[in-house]
Amino acid sequence: MTRYRGGMWAPQGFYLEQDTWEARTVPKGGGILEGMENSIYIRLPVPPVLMPFLGAFLGGLYVIFLPLIAPALLVWLLGVKARKGLMSVKVRLLEGRRGA
Image (cartoon, rainbow, N blue to C red):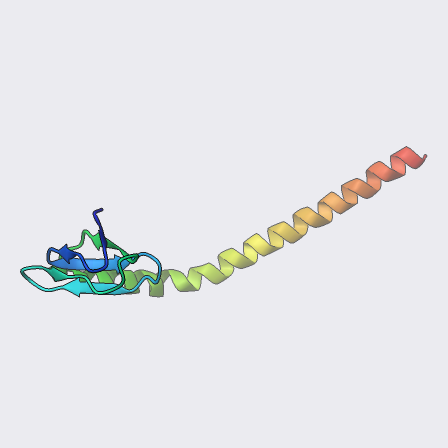
């Protein structure tokens, strides 16, 4: 990925400002990237024609996997709680052996 600074000439494409994640487009034929000289832009390697399809695809993935996140987080949370509970029981058992 090519990096550009604010105020530099850049070829046509999509650019992402590294600090603020702000997207900029440079029209056909190239142009000057807006922003201060300390702004760093990364050229995104996606052709403009594919951008709407990519957006729809990523949106579809979000809709499909969002309902799966809640059960996965619940299983993870229960696993963490169970592990902590088992560790505390193990500690109590070991302390009981030492005291006897």
